[in-house]
Amino acid sequence: MQFDYLKHVTGGLDRHAVLNELMAAYGKDVWNFAFFYTRSRELADDISQDVFVKVFQQLYEFRGQSSIKTWLLAITRNTARDVLRSAWIRRVTFFGGLVRPQEQTSPSAERESFDKLMTEEIWAVVLKLPQKLREVLLMNSHYGLSMQEMADMLHVSVGTVKSRLHRARAAVNRSLTQEAKWTGEEEWT
Image (tube, rainbow, N blue to C red; front, side, top):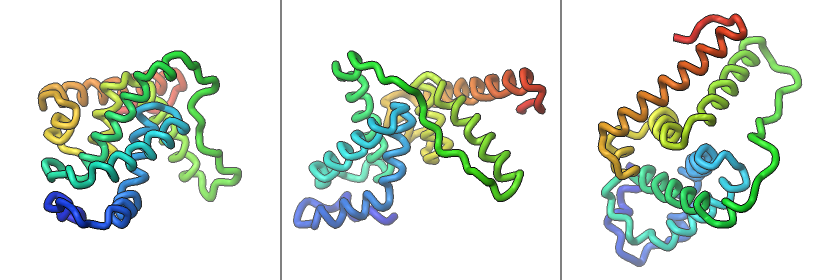
C-alpha cells in the first residue's frame, strides 16, 4: 500500500509533504464522508480541515492497526460527531436544505440525464436514513470498507454492522419501491 511506511515512522519525517500526499489521495473521501454524515457543505468543509489538522498533529501516532483510509474516516466520523454534539450546532437552526448540484442545461444524451436523475433520487433516499444506517451503507458501498474495518471503526460487533447494513439496504429498497409505485415506474428489485 502507498502509505504503509507511516506505521514505522517515529519522527524526522516531513509532515507537510506527507499531509499533502494524504490530502491529495483522501481529501475528497474525507469531505464526502463529512458531508454525508452532517448533510451540510459548510460543516463538511470545516470538518475536513479539522481532520487534516488532527492528522498533521497525530501523524507519528499512526501504528497501522487499520488502513490509512480507515484511520482517516474514523477521525472524520469522530470529528463530525463532536461537531454535531456541540452546543452551538444544537442551538442554531440552518435554513435551506440539501443543496443539489447544478442541473445540466443541455445533457448530451437522454441516458445521461436519466442516470443523473436516478443517482440524485438514490442519494436523497440515502441521506434520509438514520445516521447509524447511513454511515454503514456509505462505508461499505462508497468506500469499500470490510465488515471488520467498519466494526472496529464504529466500536460495535461485526454482527451489528451486518444488521445495520441489511436494514439500510432494505430501507433504501423499500423507499425506492414505494416511490416507483406512486409514480408508476418499474419496480426496484
